[in-house]
Amino acid sequence: MTTTVRATTRTRRPAAEPYRPFALRVSRVHRLSTTFVRVTLAGPALAEFAGHGLDQRVNLLLLPATADHEAFAARPDWLAAWRSGPPASWAPLRVYTVRAFRPAALEVDIDFTLHGDSGPASRWATAARPGDRVVMIGATHGHRVTDVAWRPPAGATRLLLAADETALPAAAAILEGLDRPARAFLEVPHPDDRLPIGGPATITWLVRSAGERLEPVLRAHLDAVAPTAPPTAVAPAEDDIWDVPEHPTGSFYAWLAGESGTVVALRRHLVGERGVDRASVAFMGYWKRGRAQPN
Ligand SMILES: Cc1cc2nc3c(=O)[nH]c(=O)nc-3n(C[C@H](O)[C@H](O)[C@H](O)COP(=O)(O)OP(=O)(O)OC[C@H]3O[C@@H](n4cnc5c(N)ncnc54)[C@H](O)[C@@H]3O)c2cc1C
Image (cartoon, rainbow, N blue to C red; front, top):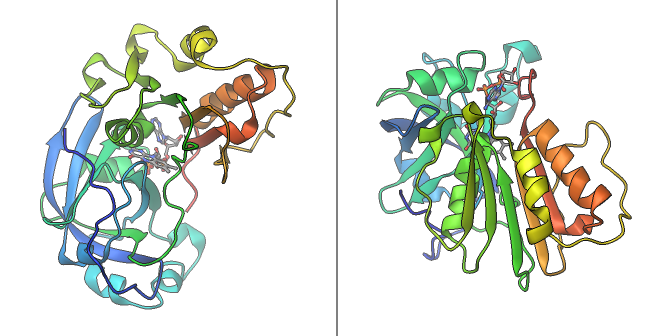
């Protein structure tokens, strides 16, 4: 498994914009398992990409294959250009995790969950071949940006991660960089999706095809890994699928990412039923069942 590279240490001139489009080409495609394909994207533009490691997210803009990706990425008005015309005509934009960044090779790995051809990103990754082009929108050097959600308090000793397959690349990158023990619960569709992950964490794999699900197993294990206190916080609203506390505190920290219904239920259990401080819980709905990611 490739190790995720943290922020590069070279001194660079700050770019004008905190985020910019990078016109990239697929350099390799490697099927990791039944569910996952690793697509390696490369290009000289990545010299300006600021790799932050952990669960760093980027946007992939799936322009038509016939588009001039380089010309698009060079446009100062790329955002307006992308959004010209009615919203239904906009090229799909989807959020992904940088599984690894190799600045010396000017390459990033993105691990795609293949979920059929109902979504443009899954469709694109299924068909991806070396030479295919894509635009990645990501951070540039010299700016404070919030593209990483993993922010445990420095003194937190009880770390909990829960993820489904869409958040496995993010969880894996976090777990491989950990400097202290953690407890991770990772749900994947098939047995061979249990990809090797290094680091000091204790990982419990849950295989959906064997009937194993994140929510009941995590609830059953929580007595051992999470504190209990009288419940005080209010449950999140129905459409509240993302909260990453700016300044988490305490010795316990939870990072929950995956299908929205599941992470909302897990967060409600931790905060609403077990009384965990909501400032100690980052929860992120990475996708919504039956709903395409909005552009
Ligand atoms: C911060 C962040 C990081 C992410 N990182 C990754 C990553 O590294 N790898 C990764 O694979 N995904 C990742 N995702 C999730 C990914 O963005 C979504 O799964 C996205 O919806 C996929 O786009 P699509 O075009 O394939 O499907 P969409 O057009 O968005 O959806 C089409 C249909 O497919 C369904 N669908 C979407 N995703 C799945 C799925 N995984 N399984 C089953 N049905 C699905 C939708 O409910 C909808 O019905 C991340 C999301 C976020 C917010």
